[in-house]
Image (cartoon, rainbow, N blue to C red; front, side, top):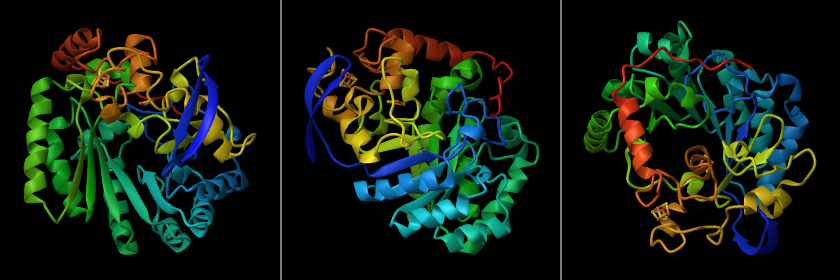
Length: 374
Ligand code: SF4
Ligand code: FES
């Protein structure tokens, strides 16, 4: 635990910060899929601007020295990096637990063996639906579903533990039970059933993606039932639809408390969408040591602790449970990252958000606006 006096957003404060537990390394924004809810920024990093192998390895060494335990190798599609095995080996050799977050497209048996030999600890494989028609439609990649099933089989052969990531929304939500069954068939130990988050690109597809309240309630009941019947077989992590909720989620477990993101070009962010907050400026691992950025960087200290909070959060009994919700969602929906997350029933924007979510949920889904490629 460290104490620091910081200046950020024009305020001087004393801040206590533990070291981060996890890093999400966005190795590249290149990706073969074009999901309509892509969480990468609207402006993607070009491959020529990506950190080199040595720059990533330096960041991983610094992360391990800082106290980080988990390294998530993500993207875009991290498999698009030809040096993925070298990066995995380097991270593993400095003691980091390595998790590959992948669509599976581009993974082959030889590359999986290479990654297993490099010390890869865990794989999260995304599925976009429980049928080829749905999955290939959502990812806009013909043959993608069949490819993922093959990749899951190869992962099983390597013995690397598998988690299935299933992002769900209006169009695939009624396949949730089948997606859970698929995860069991694929030999996964865990599935993450997560509702689309309406940031960035997903905002362009609100009416095509927003579930109805009835769908959300049905899914919540199905997940609870599946948790009972699959106890000891499959762990189910569930991220419900927050636009239909009364209280926001504790996004990132609180700002600057548990983890950080590094973008393909080396910018260090408190969360994946932090660049949508125009008042913040971000440091780069090419210019400043990672520990210095974590403890002293102005972006990290902008929303640490609770003295930045305004009413109704500042006097609320839940402020240490949800930390005022998601700063990026407050920016997007209330026009200020200092505001209470509008998902909260105490926010003056809550009613409007809830009504809009109902309307978008009930509307006939228009065609997807697919994500463009880097
Ligand atoms: Fe959370 Fe703020 Fe709402 Fe209280 S008022 S529940 S702290 S978002
Ligand atoms: Fe940025 Fe929630 S996504 S704080």
